[in-house]
Image (cartoon, rainbow, N blue to C red; front, side, top):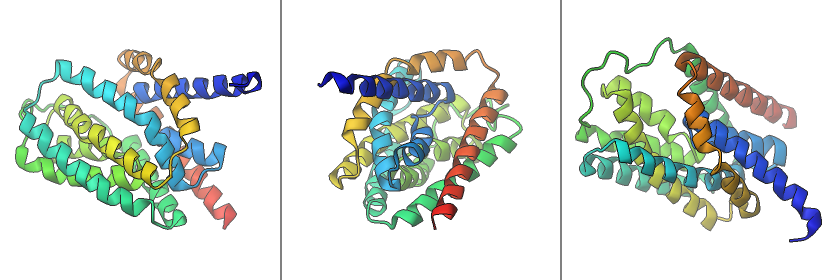
Length: 258
């Protein structure tokens, strides 16, 4: 590697570390922050930004799933039901996403982020608060959640957990712990499938994505650790504001370039 490229590499590694930290802090893979950054800061189109963000997300999600399952054991039939349906759905919708008109895909992403941001901002309490049941997964519900979460993962390259966790806690009355474990079982294999599909369509910038992913591996745990010491309500609202600002910025940018 030429010496003049070293500052650029250090900058990308630092950026990856920051994305990994905030991904751990907010309990996400980092894609919902990385995609707007790639579009605004690096001038990528929507599909390329989503595919590159998946390079950052996959290792973080794999590590998170492995660590989470050391402490939260769920029936394999439930994991298989939600994981398989989500992965197949992700594959189908990702093939659609890489062929979809970029402006249409861009608006779908913007509106999704905006809606999720406002929902989190207006949520008054944890939807699973007060649940005393729900540790045993509802097997019949897993394919439904898997299809909806997989659609988000394939079409947007992220958001499977943002779709699945509220469904599992509000509609199917699972505890937050069970919902998060099942969401990881959905998102982790789906992110791998989405990355493979985007890569096969040449919608991944590996030169940027791999250093970002490497930098993020060193800071995810720190973000998770700090999150446990912060008030949940303040943390949720901070994340909601970040998403709303990013979505509004992208919408204004789209209107300006039309």
